[in-house]
Length: 244
Ligand code: F3S
Image (cartoon, rainbow, N blue to C red; front, side, top):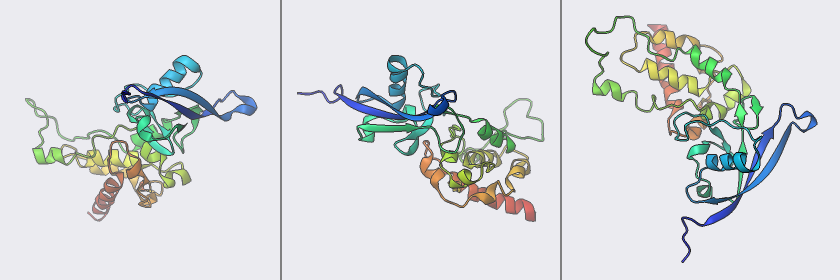
């Protein structure tokens, strides 16, 4: 009897490539074929292509565990983490792999995330405290205060949400759902003393008010987080801040 766990299936990977030094052939699609078995992720296959077929294929990866966010890319039209996407579970013998939309491509699947990081820094993505810490303990939170951070702290900053957002496609200065979610992660933190400092960058035509509640960011998040919910909460915080 056939062992379906070790059975291999021939899969064609259609990879969108970009070579900045490629002259007239800068952008093209290249096909690679690999025998894939159950358990192999898209990242495993890209590694195999790079190591055995084409060392010039460029992409980012690091932890291979869905934590670092480096390998976010568009796979069969959906933003996903390559390391968490099982090839055979996609149910297709042809897999298209493209760089995240909306970002400048450096080479092949590697995009320039510097602007995304700059927008993140604009919301001061760290705890701001105005009092010295207790001398003998950490800053304490109750279980209920800690629970408020669930659904916020898990963001790995992969960029899948922002890359899927039409408001971002239309306005490259738009801060983006990754920055909003991170801002709310600190505003919701009972230990943070300066919500206004996180909110400052958001009250802008390229900030919160540019979100049209399209929800693509929710669908795109590989960690099943909800940036739209955070955006609604931030708008309430901003109104509270404005009217005292
Ligand atoms: Fe964009 Fe998400 Fe708002 S997709 S428009 S940030 S709800």
